[in-house]
Image (cartoon, rainbow, N blue to C red):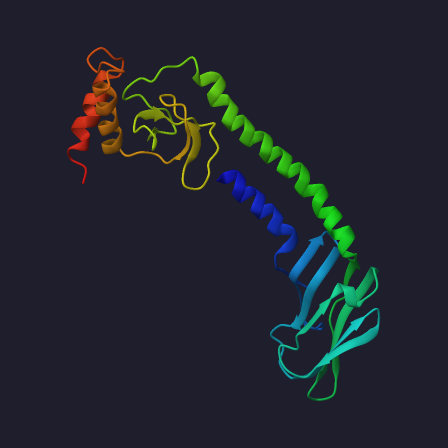
Length: 246
């Protein structure tokens, strides 16, 4: 789950909305530059973006200029201008706004410099980042599946003894086993192979009551002897504790 969250967070960094406030002071117009949807990394951008003026009174009109050429004018607050980089040529562009006040005077914003790139280049840049990331996530996930198989074969189940990831009850055979910390998380549980029946399942962490019941089923099947097992005290304590759980 953490690996999935990391992947989605990093992907959102490139394609999801973001906002940049152009530096301003008392003598400049406060211009807000935001990414509605598209690519953005460093000064390179591609997709749909917006410009607007934030919290400035006494404005009648705002003109937006790209490379010293007026491309849009607005007379309604917040004087928003939405555009797509495909409307303009590729390359470096200087973006700013000039506001006209009610008394006829004008005020200018600071300039924002961005390089407009093609969609092909944007996809290529994202791919250069995403493909290695997917490979890393894939290797980690594969390791999470293989490590329990390699190291788990030499271990036998000890009743009442569970690791840091807790115990689980196999939905196929109903018997308990320890979840591996290396097993991949798939939102609702870990993907893991049952050491008893050999089948794969997504198993959440089981409660004490569920584990106690499963331990009794394991004992009744004759696969363990609670009285002789290493974890006999833990099993008995688990059964005792489960009596007080609702």
